[in-house]
Length: 121
Image (cartoon, rainbow, N blue to C red; front, side, top):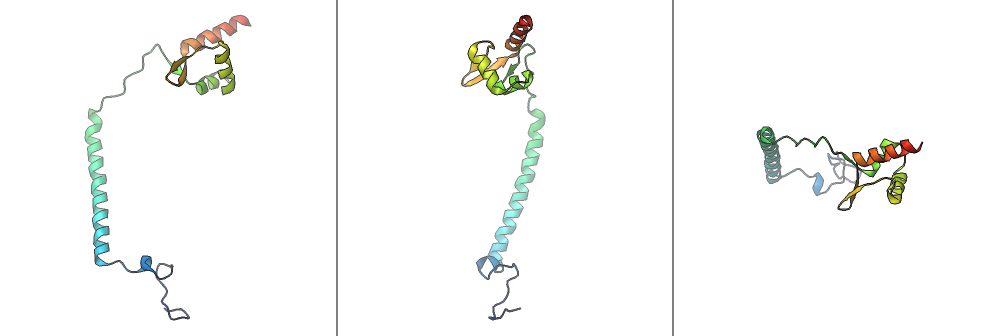
C-alpha cells in the first residue's frame, strides 16, 4: 500500500533501501549453505566432544597436606578486610609465599597466625 507520495511501505518497517529488498536467489542460497554449515559444525563439535570426554584424564587430586589461599579468601576466613590482611603481611604477623606476582597464604601460615593470637589472648 503506497503512502501519500506513492512510495510503497516496506514489509520490514524500515525505509525502502537495500536491507529491505527481497533476497536474491544467490543470497538465499548463501544463507542456506551458511545455516547448513553452522548446524553441521555444531553437530560435529558435539560428536567430537563426546568422543574426547571419556578419554580425558580426570583432574589430578590435590595433595592433602597443602592448601594455599588468596588474600581475599583469607580476609573472608578471618572476617576482616583485604587491607587488614595486607597490613598483617606487611608487618610480618602473617606469613605468605609468592608465586611470581601472586601472593598466597598456606593453611600452615594461617594456623600459625591463629595459634599466635590465641596464645596472646
